[in-house]
Image 1 (tube, rainbow, N blue to C red):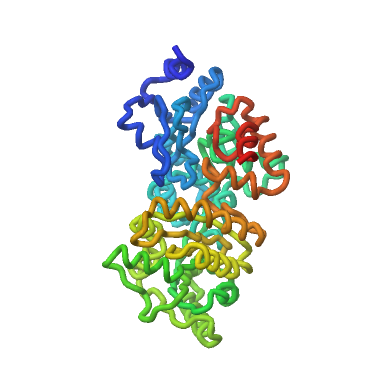
Image 2: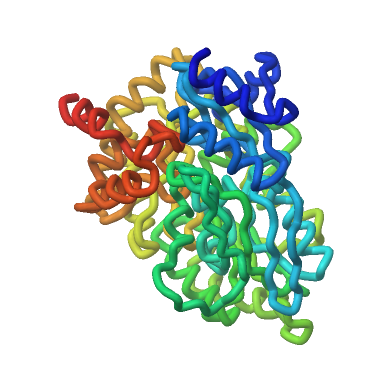
Length: 480
């Protein structure tokens, strides 16, 4: 009996799935670029069962791949194609453990779907600020493991900024539990931050305590047209000052991205009559029933028109129109798939340098990738832009994308590095960006990461081949 079979024999059979027809959904990555293999998917119902799994694997040095909603863009939750790893899905662990409206906090199992946890907060007349395009399927443990961003980072921060406490099963099966939702706890190292953004390489997050916010009483959404991308920073600054920092989202959409979407979905239409090179989707919200937010934003738009910072704009007159605006923004990735997929660049620079990055990266594409469509959109308020390249209609799409990834992507990443930015703003590292971390990571960072990995997971059983390269992988990458 091999080690995997020994592990499976020691586990309750009701948590073991071996049917390969079912397993295939867990071994194919979200973008369908990578297909791994596993003998079984393990689906525990509680933390004790996770500990049982990890102890059994640790004793036999069987690697584990933790998985939430399997929505990673970087194959962080996909097993390797060697077939020597077991997948641990947290999907059955979806219980709300504690809701404390007076403390503005909620504690829940890591397997709860993000939109379900948002609804729990909403039912208590509160807001869980983490909001993503995949919120109907992604799970909160995966959101924390990748330090998810989303559309509200400008106001509320990244996923890590919402975390008050964590429960984590460590690589030896022991438990780190500090779920108490305190806002002040200066009792030594902030250990929980080690596991946020670690993509399951240091342990399996099994529960979390999160900050909540007051539910907005007023929300105002505007779709704006601008001619000059250099105006973005000025518009954002004016919006924040005029509304008293009530801006929750400030999203950039290039006309090329919007056109890809309109071509893909015939039923959609432009929100504005005229056509512009650049657009901004702006949203402000307040829990105050007294402040007149609509009047404030109306004044803001008048000010922006007067100074020539926007050329057109409209405010959503209903919840339906607001949903239509957001549908345009959130459907761009789907439109890219319709046109043959894209080579993605999840880049961030200082907000003050974002327009310069977009212009410089666009010149790289124009000069070196004739026919490629630059689909550029993102969270301008926090400096994160998705600079994606779509192959032209009549090209061999696979070959064209391979050439873009080989010849253009390195130039895009080099530009971000030269502007003191990052190659990974919110998608993480996973399997596909380890070489970029090796090349562009902060000096000494890999050494510290490897030391932490070795200290917590000396046998390397937690999500191997993701985020942190082994010494052998580092040596091979250095000889490429």
